[in-house]
Image (tube, rainbow, N blue to C red; front, side, top):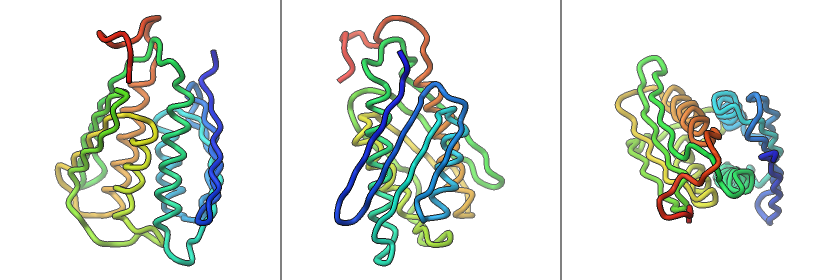
Length: 194
């Protein structure tokens, strides 16, 4: 069975299309009109091995918040749909990502229980038109709609670009482990992931 999905979201604030293939090669075509977000999602795709196409537009004349958050929501919905019954997945994933002076540790569980632990100090700043604090909102939308438990821990770092890059790369690597098919059973003693 091919683990693929397509999601479309249209609201008064954003219009987003996402297609995803879990068993891909990390190829991507990303166009959100927020250059820094495009760059982060390309990194996520490359390091997760997930083929990802995203086209998103929205009310960026207000700010980038709605577009960033709604893109996270759609990415989460696409992941949940593509995972299907979750039979045979590894379920857990871990990654430690150095990016120059920065080190981020990421752990996740495809648990069916959405939870975000974001141990990254509030750092106000911008990368182009991207508000770096929107990373938290992006991830919150992603985990709620994918139903995963995600822990992001910044051990140290100063450069905002490096911190965000380490977050998205480590998320990709951890997810690559967690979605890998290893068998024919559901990885749960409960007999369900819910």
